[in-house]
Length: 226
Image (cartoon, one colour):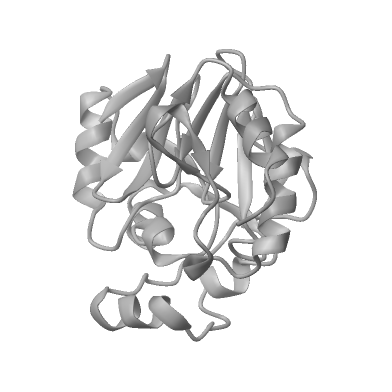
């Protein structure tokens, strides 16, 4: 685990990241990582001098198992409220299944699936919501209900999720089409993020960028997809 900016901790779980955000009344967790990796979250909280019981809210960027894998267990243990976009909620709760396609189908044969869990707050629009200091930004493309979150701290911290990925040398890359439902929509979402102002960007996959991170999004948005 590493502290990206004051009170924002990145939890590396192999190829995917989750995030702990220390707030005045406890902890906000952004995504939960792969199934079976709750001990990694617990260890990260311990290093941040926090506990699972202090998690008050879990913000989900999208429905994929590597981001919601620990959701059910963490919700049970903490009593945290879960926030997600309405378009992904039926899959997260188990009301609807989405048959995997392409490489996701192959991954599904060997990877453990996420346990369904209730969602307490359903996002339907951009802007502030129940968690002070955060704004929700609907960034579809990777999934229909993908959400990025902008935290009002350190000049703006953008939790990108899988709307884009962090590359070497402080670059931002498009999430590969093998894992993305609609590349054209995903490109438009990147363009929307490039219109914001933020200093720091953290990703579901890849390295965080600190210092005028928005400029990297503007560079990516200026290039044609592909």
